[in-house]
Length: 149
Picture (cartoon, rainbow, N blue to C red):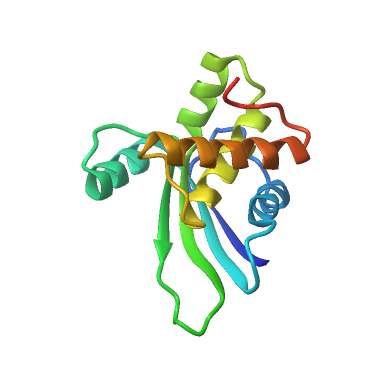
């Protein structure tokens, strides 16, 4: 699947990955997803924006690491379309708390978000296991260890 990617940086003072890295991670997550084009916007935000979106669309309080918004495409159009909203301060905090390099945690958040856009979820335990196994395989191809270990 081809990738058409836009990156929006709406937070300041954070160590943010560049568009080329985000593209690399997103392309890896799209491997094997079929024909067509993936039109994805990745928006890097602060905690206030993440919390507002999390409350509005999920009914949950506080900022979260990644939110995925998938959009319907015309029936004849192959591919996927959606937005990922990634909260830079939450990703940095989780990286430190989990003792993971910041770049590898960013990669995981992009891959995880793309998996949601592909239709995977982790609401039910069996679905979570399938999704996590795919993420582990994708990240391994990128030279990143199992984020769930």
